[in-house]
Image (cartoon, rainbow, N blue to C red; front, side):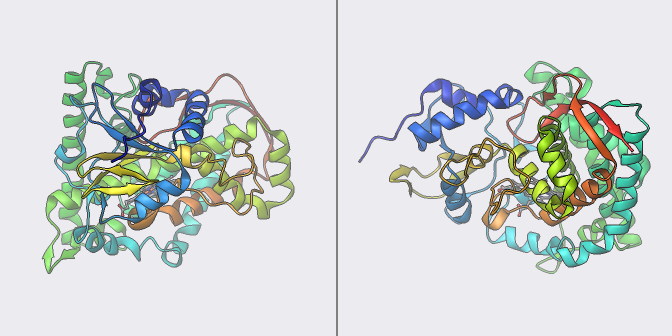
Length: 418
Ligand code: HEM
């Protein structure tokens, strides 16, 4: 038996600690060292269960592909005595399911979220995008792009597909931020700081969101509409209506995961363009590059920082044995800068081609909303770019403290619009 490659503690700590993700440049340097010196290694930190770090693009894909060996169930890495415990949240999300359940739940919304079906949403999305571009033009030359634009537009899109009213947007925004921002003192419920306060806050957040969606289920069962909430509320699993625990999980996953990710990717894209006028000029001159801008923004930002898997049996990865029951962290931002996959991975290029990335995950759990995310981002840029003459940073942007889902938290920009 070979001894597992042990990841030095400071490198392991950087992967696990939500605070490192607030300084992505330095975390990317750490990932580069891990990819070069360790590839696939085992971390042993006193406050975490031992975990393996998958930092190479090919390892992430290969582990995610083997969903009968590497099981889903947990979200990001959490300390042993954590306030955040995905399986103990009062709902069951599709991201945490495994065969045979996972396929039965996934197929329920796959058709609804397929490119052919979501095309019918285009006119509405474009009207929303225009409203936010107009707001940028009205901002008087300077604005916080995250707070004023990026967090709202994708949330309103997701609320429209779920079929919940626009006026609930501020509440939904607060609940998402409290949920994903539970490690960020700026975002926790009532500014919770201690693990006990955070745990209590999270429970309250989940209770509030559950009560909201319980009502939606009742409404849509009584009166189904042409929206995703009606699909979920009336879905049958093995002939029975979906248990409440699962329908709540479904709504919450779509509402929460569906917008924070897209907001971060749009904001990450504008941040990159603000620092690279040549790339802005290129895509403005040739709008056929917009899909490239969208995909590069998603790779560049990688808003889902990690998902973990647990080995169902002993399994080999890069010649090392992951023991049954051990965790593996899929480090998506690292895979998306892998020097073996990308030419100049640390350059942002709107015409990067071909462009593969693991920001949407891979295999059985690959993002169900990826076509929607691409479409809403494309429409936003199609509306913004013809009017955006110049953009530059008006101050240092800040990123969310999270090892799970997040990205730019503030993005002060100076803009010139026609
Ligand atoms: C740029 C935007 C987005 C990114 C980067 C992203 C990223 C991801 C990733 C990495 C996963 C895989 C998790 C895993 O492997 O365990 C995932 C799953 C998922 N995403 Fe997204 N997502 C985005 C937008 C959306 C949108 C708009 C929706 C809303 C419809 C959505 C709904 C879902 C759902 C339901 C799953 C679970 C799929 C499953 O477990 O089978 N996502 N997403």
